[in-house]
Image (cartoon, rainbow, N blue to C red; front, side):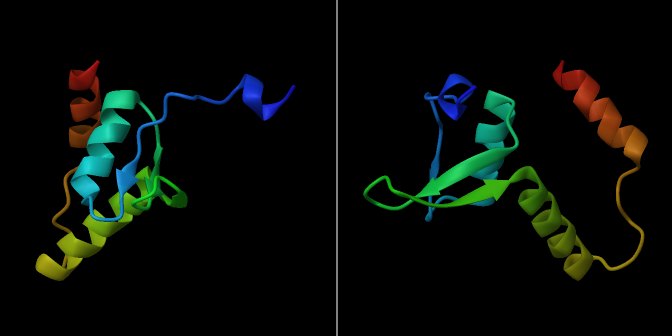
Length: 84
């Protein structure tokens, strides 16, 4: 089997000037965990993953409010169930 048999050719991407919210929106709408980042000519220059976004949010929250003030896993699971 070749990669071409599995790959998606209708790929959504972000530019280097887009914010993480845009990348997260693309992942949510397309049920995927990574978004390619392209330059002004549409050439691939990198990838942003759902983990990158989570870690960025976690870091931002830790700087803003240090300590154990994060939502519970039950809350996160409830949010996921509402999506379906």
